[in-house]
Image (cartoon, rainbow, N blue to C red; front, side, top):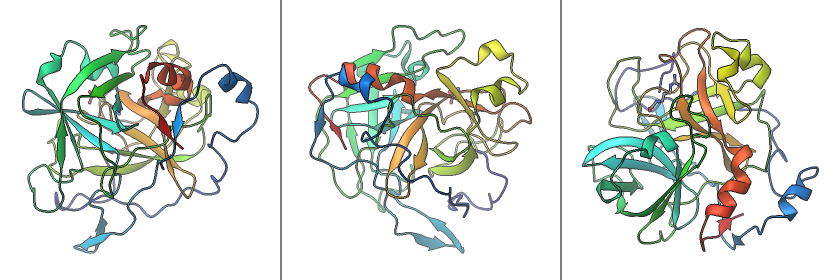
Length: 295
Ligand code: ARG
Protein backbone atom coordinates (compact mmCIF):
# COMPACT_ATOMS: atom_id res chain seq x y z
CA UNK A 1 0.00 0.00 0.00
CA UNK A 2 1.57 3.24 -1.10
CA UNK A 3 0.52 6.58 0.08
CA UNK A 4 2.11 9.92 -0.54
CA UNK A 5 1.04 11.39 2.78
CA UNK A 6 2.60 9.78 5.82
CA UNK A 7 4.90 6.91 6.51
CA UNK A 8 6.70 8.13 9.57
CA UNK A 9 6.25 5.02 11.66
CA UNK A 10 4.97 1.55 11.05
CA UNK A 11 2.45 2.19 13.81
CA UNK A 12 0.77 4.97 11.95
CA UNK A 13 -2.26 4.05 9.99
CA UNK A 14 -2.53 6.01 6.80
CA UNK A 15 -5.79 7.79 6.76
CA UNK A 16 -6.66 10.61 4.51
CA UNK A 17 -9.55 12.80 5.41
CA UNK A 18 -11.16 13.06 2.08
CA UNK A 19 -14.57 11.57 2.27
CA UNK A 20 -16.20 10.34 -0.91
CA UNK A 21 -19.18 12.52 -1.63
CA UNK A 22 -22.76 11.64 -2.33
CA UNK A 23 -22.56 7.92 -2.76
CA UNK A 24 -25.89 7.16 -1.15
CA UNK A 25 -28.13 4.64 -2.87
CA UNK A 26 -25.31 3.68 -5.14
CA UNK A 27 -25.24 0.03 -4.29
CA UNK A 28 -27.95 -1.98 -2.46
CA UNK A 29 -30.01 -4.73 -3.97
CA UNK A 30 -33.14 -2.60 -3.89
CA UNK A 31 -32.27 -0.91 -7.14
CA UNK A 32 -33.41 -0.63 -10.61
CA UNK A 33 -32.24 -1.73 -14.00
CA UNK A 34 -30.38 -4.85 -13.00
CA UNK A 35 -33.04 -6.53 -10.94
CA UNK A 36 -34.14 -8.60 -13.93
CA UNK A 37 -30.73 -10.24 -13.92
CA UNK A 38 -30.87 -11.03 -10.24
CA UNK A 39 -34.32 -12.54 -10.63
CA UNK A 40 -32.89 -15.51 -12.44
CA UNK A 41 -30.57 -16.28 -9.60
CA UNK A 42 -31.50 -17.84 -6.35
CA UNK A 43 -30.18 -15.09 -4.08
CA UNK A 44 -29.35 -16.56 -0.71
CA UNK A 45 -29.58 -13.89 1.94
CA UNK A 46 -29.79 -14.19 5.66
CA UNK A 47 -30.65 -12.00 8.57
CA UNK A 48 -27.33 -10.36 9.38
CA UNK A 49 -25.54 -7.14 8.58
CA UNK A 50 -22.64 -6.61 6.23
CA UNK A 51 -20.28 -3.77 5.62
CA UNK A 52 -20.28 -2.04 9.00
CA UNK A 53 -16.83 -0.79 9.89
CA UNK A 54 -15.65 -0.05 13.39
CA UNK A 55 -15.53 3.69 13.48
CA UNK A 56 -14.07 4.46 16.84
CA UNK A 57 -10.47 5.26 16.42
CA UNK A 58 -7.40 5.29 18.56
CA UNK A 59 -5.05 8.20 18.21
CA UNK A 60 -1.35 7.49 17.99
CA UNK A 61 1.09 10.24 17.22
CA UNK A 62 -1.71 12.50 16.12
CA UNK A 63 -2.93 10.20 13.35
CA UNK A 64 -5.94 7.97 13.58
CA UNK A 65 -5.34 4.26 13.48
CA UNK A 66 -8.17 1.80 13.46
CA UNK A 67 -7.83 -1.54 15.19
CA UNK A 68 -10.20 -3.88 13.37
CA UNK A 69 -11.59 -0.92 11.51
CA UNK A 70 -12.44 -3.14 8.55
CA UNK A 71 -13.64 -6.27 10.35
CA UNK A 72 -13.87 -8.41 7.18
CA UNK A 73 -10.11 -8.15 6.56
CA UNK A 74 -8.56 -11.58 6.33
CA UNK A 75 -4.88 -12.40 6.22
CA UNK A 76 -4.06 -15.48 4.16
CA UNK A 77 -1.04 -17.29 5.53
CA UNK A 78 0.69 -20.05 3.58
CA UNK A 79 3.08 -22.42 5.23
CA UNK A 80 3.31 -20.04 8.16
CA UNK A 81 4.12 -17.00 6.04
CA UNK A 82 1.96 -14.03 5.10
CA UNK A 83 0.72 -14.60 1.56
CA UNK A 84 -2.25 -12.44 0.51
CA UNK A 85 -5.24 -10.50 1.70
CA UNK A 86 -8.86 -11.55 1.54
CA UNK A 87 -12.31 -10.47 2.73
CA UNK A 88 -14.92 -12.28 4.77
CA UNK A 89 -18.09 -12.55 2.68
CA UNK A 90 -20.27 -14.96 4.67
CA UNK A 91 -19.70 -16.95 7.84
CA UNK A 92 -18.20 -19.71 5.67
CA UNK A 93 -16.44 -17.93 2.81
CA UNK A 94 -13.55 -15.60 2.11
CA UNK A 95 -13.22 -13.87 -1.25
CA UNK A 96 -9.74 -13.31 -2.66
CA UNK A 97 -7.80 -13.29 -5.94
CA UNK A 98 -7.40 -16.50 -7.94
CA UNK A 99 -3.70 -15.77 -8.47
CA UNK A 100 -3.29 -15.87 -4.68
CA UNK A 101 -4.38 -19.47 -4.45
CA UNK A 102 -3.09 -21.02 -7.65
CA UNK A 103 -0.70 -23.87 -7.00
CA UNK A 104 -1.25 -23.76 -3.24
CA UNK A 105 -1.63 -26.86 -1.08
CA UNK A 106 -4.95 -26.39 0.63
CA UNK A 107 -3.74 -27.98 3.84
CA UNK A 108 -1.04 -25.34 4.27
CA UNK A 109 -3.43 -22.38 4.08
CA UNK A 110 -4.58 -20.60 7.22
CA UNK A 111 -6.81 -17.56 7.33
CA UNK A 112 -6.55 -15.09 10.17
CA UNK A 113 -9.37 -12.77 11.13
CA UNK A 114 -9.60 -9.98 13.65
CA UNK A 115 -5.91 -9.18 13.32
CA UNK A 116 -4.37 -5.76 13.14
CA UNK A 117 -0.68 -5.79 13.83
CA UNK A 118 0.89 -9.09 12.81
CA UNK A 119 3.43 -8.77 15.60
CA UNK A 120 1.26 -7.77 18.52
CA UNK A 121 -1.33 -10.16 19.89
CA UNK A 122 -2.52 -8.10 22.84
CA UNK A 123 -4.60 -5.52 21.02
CA UNK A 124 -7.16 -7.78 19.41
CA UNK A 125 -8.36 -11.38 19.63
CA UNK A 126 -7.42 -12.85 16.28
CA UNK A 127 -8.81 -16.20 15.21
CA UNK A 128 -7.57 -18.69 12.64
CA UNK A 129 -9.33 -21.01 10.21
CA UNK A 130 -8.26 -23.80 7.88
CA UNK A 131 -9.80 -24.13 4.40
CA UNK A 132 -11.92 -27.02 3.11
CA UNK A 133 -12.26 -25.99 -0.52
CA UNK A 134 -10.85 -23.53 -3.02
CA UNK A 135 -13.12 -22.33 -5.82
CA UNK A 136 -11.04 -20.55 -8.43
CA UNK A 137 -12.88 -18.96 -11.34
CA UNK A 138 -12.72 -21.50 -14.17
CA UNK A 139 -11.75 -18.81 -16.66
CA UNK A 140 -8.95 -17.35 -14.54
CA UNK A 141 -6.09 -16.71 -16.94
CA UNK A 142 -2.71 -16.78 -15.18
CA UNK A 143 -1.08 -14.91 -18.09
CA UNK A 144 -3.44 -11.97 -18.26
CA UNK A 145 -4.99 -12.20 -14.76
CA UNK A 146 -8.43 -12.04 -16.35
CA UNK A 147 -11.14 -13.34 -13.95
CA UNK A 148 -8.83 -13.13 -10.95
CA UNK A 149 -11.31 -14.22 -8.30
CA UNK A 150 -11.62 -17.14 -5.88
CA UNK A 151 -13.69 -18.26 -2.91
CA UNK A 152 -12.21 -20.14 0.03
CA UNK A 153 -14.52 -22.18 2.22
CA UNK A 154 -13.61 -22.17 5.90
CA UNK A 155 -13.47 -25.43 7.81
CA UNK A 156 -15.45 -23.95 10.69
CA UNK A 157 -17.92 -21.10 10.28
CA UNK A 158 -17.17 -17.70 11.78
CA UNK A 159 -19.33 -16.37 14.56
CA UNK A 160 -19.63 -12.68 13.73
CA UNK A 161 -18.52 -10.30 16.45
CA UNK A 162 -17.56 -6.69 16.86
CA UNK A 163 -14.16 -7.36 15.37
CA UNK A 164 -15.13 -9.93 12.72
CA UNK A 165 -17.94 -9.09 10.30
CA UNK A 166 -18.58 -9.64 6.58
CA UNK A 167 -18.33 -7.05 3.81
CA UNK A 168 -21.24 -6.31 1.42
CA UNK A 169 -21.30 -7.21 -2.26
CA UNK A 170 -22.14 -4.46 -4.73
CA UNK A 171 -25.13 -4.75 -7.00
CA UNK A 172 -24.57 -6.76 -10.17
CA UNK A 173 -22.88 -4.62 -12.85
CA UNK A 174 -22.60 -1.59 -10.55
CA UNK A 175 -19.92 0.72 -11.99
CA UNK A 176 -17.94 2.67 -9.36
CA UNK A 177 -16.14 4.90 -11.92
CA UNK A 178 -15.51 8.40 -10.61
CA UNK A 179 -15.78 7.43 -6.93
CA UNK A 180 -13.04 7.36 -4.35
CA UNK A 181 -12.39 3.86 -3.03
CA UNK A 182 -10.25 2.60 -0.17
CA UNK A 183 -7.77 -0.25 -0.55
CA UNK A 184 -6.81 -2.10 2.60
CA UNK A 185 -3.90 -4.48 3.02
CA UNK A 186 -0.64 -5.64 4.49
CA UNK A 187 1.25 -5.03 1.24
CA UNK A 188 4.55 -3.26 0.67
CA UNK A 189 4.60 0.43 1.45
CA UNK A 190 6.88 1.24 -1.47
CA UNK A 191 7.82 -0.52 -4.69
CA UNK A 192 10.31 -3.18 -3.68
CA UNK A 193 9.95 -2.02 -0.09
CA UNK A 194 9.08 -3.80 3.11
CA UNK A 195 5.97 -5.54 4.30
CA UNK A 196 4.47 -3.60 7.20
CA UNK A 197 3.26 -5.43 10.26
CA UNK A 198 0.17 -3.30 10.52
CA UNK A 199 -2.72 -3.19 8.07
CA UNK A 200 -2.75 -0.05 5.95
CA UNK A 201 -5.31 1.77 3.89
CA UNK A 202 -5.15 4.26 1.08
CA UNK A 203 -7.81 6.20 -0.81
CA UNK A 204 -7.75 5.71 -4.57
CA UNK A 205 -9.76 7.36 -7.34
CA UNK A 206 -11.59 4.75 -9.45
CA UNK A 207 -11.33 5.14 -13.23
CA UNK A 208 -13.75 4.27 -15.97
CA UNK A 209 -12.71 1.51 -18.37
CA UNK A 210 -12.05 4.10 -21.08
CA UNK A 211 -9.86 6.17 -18.79
CA UNK A 212 -7.94 3.09 -17.83
CA UNK A 213 -7.41 2.00 -21.42
CA UNK A 214 -5.95 5.46 -22.07
CA UNK A 215 -3.24 4.94 -19.46
CA UNK A 216 0.09 3.34 -20.31
CA UNK A 217 -1.13 -0.24 -20.27
CA UNK A 218 -1.78 -1.91 -23.62
CA UNK A 219 -5.50 -1.22 -23.90
CA UNK A 220 -6.40 -4.83 -24.67
CA UNK A 221 -4.91 -5.90 -21.34
CA UNK A 222 -7.75 -4.14 -19.53
CA UNK A 223 -10.85 -6.31 -19.86
CA UNK A 224 -14.41 -5.40 -18.94
CA UNK A 225 -14.10 -7.46 -15.76
CA UNK A 226 -11.14 -5.41 -14.53
CA UNK A 227 -11.16 -2.04 -12.84
CA UNK A 228 -8.38 0.52 -12.48
CA UNK A 229 -7.84 2.76 -9.49
CA UNK A 230 -5.13 4.90 -8.05
CA UNK A 231 -2.88 7.78 -8.93
CA UNK A 232 0.87 8.30 -8.68
CA UNK A 233 2.10 7.19 -5.25
CA UNK A 234 -1.39 6.18 -4.14
CA UNK A 235 -1.71 2.53 -4.99
CA UNK A 236 -1.79 -0.99 -3.70
CA UNK A 237 1.42 -3.02 -3.99
CA UNK A 238 2.85 -6.52 -3.66
CA UNK A 239 1.27 -8.27 -0.70
CA UNK A 240 -2.02 -6.41 -1.04
CA UNK A 241 -3.25 -8.94 -3.60
CA UNK A 242 -6.53 -10.60 -2.82
CA UNK A 243 -7.53 -7.78 -0.49
CA UNK A 244 -10.48 -5.47 -1.04
CA UNK A 245 -11.03 -2.19 -2.82
CA UNK A 246 -13.91 -0.79 -0.79
CA UNK A 247 -16.54 1.81 -1.42
CA UNK A 248 -18.79 3.26 1.23
CA UNK A 249 -22.30 4.59 0.72
CA UNK A 250 -21.98 6.48 3.97
CA UNK A 251 -23.43 3.60 5.96
CA UNK A 252 -21.87 0.38 4.76
CA UNK A 253 -18.80 -0.75 2.86
CA UNK A 254 -19.04 -2.70 -0.40
CA UNK A 255 -16.25 -4.67 -2.01
CA UNK A 256 -16.01 -3.29 -5.54
CA UNK A 257 -12.55 -4.63 -6.36
CA UNK A 258 -9.99 -7.28 -5.48
CA UNK A 259 -6.31 -6.31 -5.68
CA UNK A 260 -5.03 -8.13 -8.77
CA UNK A 261 -2.06 -6.66 -10.66
CA UNK A 262 -0.12 -3.61 -11.76
CA UNK A 263 3.25 -2.59 -13.20
CA UNK A 264 5.38 -1.54 -10.27
CA UNK A 265 3.53 0.36 -7.59
CA UNK A 266 2.29 3.92 -7.67
CA UNK A 267 3.88 4.66 -11.04
CA UNK A 268 2.55 7.42 -13.22
CA UNK A 269 0.30 5.96 -15.93
CA UNK A 270 0.18 2.51 -14.32
CA UNK A 271 -2.75 2.42 -11.90
CA UNK A 272 -3.54 -0.63 -9.82
CA UNK A 273 -5.75 -3.15 -11.60
CA UNK A 274 -8.52 -4.84 -9.65
CA UNK A 275 -11.02 -7.59 -10.33
CA UNK A 276 -14.34 -5.85 -11.01
CA UNK A 277 -16.40 -7.62 -8.34
CA UNK A 278 -19.80 -6.32 -9.54
CA UNK A 279 -19.37 -8.42 -12.72
CA UNK A 280 -18.97 -11.57 -10.65
CA UNK A 281 -21.99 -11.27 -8.37
CA UNK A 282 -23.87 -14.12 -10.14
CA UNK A 283 -20.71 -16.26 -10.09
CA UNK A 284 -20.26 -15.61 -6.39
CA UNK A 285 -23.89 -16.38 -5.59
CA UNK A 286 -23.84 -19.62 -7.48
CA UNK A 287 -20.62 -20.74 -5.79
CA UNK A 288 -21.57 -20.06 -2.18
CA UNK A 289 -22.65 -23.52 -1.15
CA UNK A 290 -25.19 -23.48 1.64
CA UNK A 291 -24.01 -20.12 2.80
CA UNK A 292 -26.11 -16.99 2.73
CA UNK A 293 -25.08 -13.39 2.22
CA UNK A 294 -25.88 -10.76 4.80
CA UNK A 295 -27.76 -7.73 3.52
N1 ARG B 1 0.02 -8.96 -7.78
C1 ARG B 1 0.32 -8.24 -6.59
C2 ARG B 1 0.26 -9.18 -5.39
O1 ARG B 1 0.31 -10.36 -5.61
C3 ARG B 1 -0.56 -7.04 -6.45
C4 ARG B 1 -0.01 -5.95 -7.23
C5 ARG B 1 -0.83 -4.74 -7.23
N2 ARG B 1 -0.03 -3.76 -7.88
C6 ARG B 1 -0.36 -2.49 -7.99
N3 ARG B 1 0.48 -1.70 -8.54
N4 ARG B 1 -1.51 -2.06 -7.55
O2 ARG B 1 0.32 -8.78 -4.24
